[in-house]
Image (cartoon, rainbow, N blue to C red; front, side, top):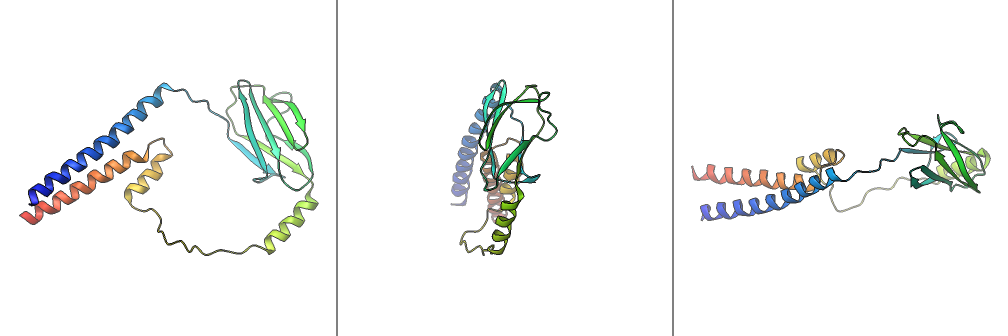
Length: 189
């Protein structure tokens, strides 16, 4: 009975690892043939502080055109783009209310683009005071536990490097199978 169970577990592991490995190899092979367009990292700011009130969208990649929009409550006065100099590094294509569209003059520029909306501080300070007074901390009452374990940790770390979590699921399944087979063999001895 133990040998039959051992053979069945081995076959299940072999099939699952093979299926996941095939997916991983197919993905890796297709990534090498596709050239990805790299966009510059956009850092949205309001009055020099990181803020979600500035949104952006890429209009074209050649030439690189980006539209920035300020969606906050303050009065927009002007835009600054970090170390980029107007007329040298970029040119303004259009301005429309709280939106501005710029075009990078050097399409090979791959540095960060800081989009800083200069906003009238009076309205923004009132809003910050009100929001701070109304802020409360909520307790996590979820009944599910977080994903943990060596395979999950490895998957999270290497997903940033372009590896897929399917690869780690196959490796984890294979490791579990080896552990089970080792335990069964030790019991037999």
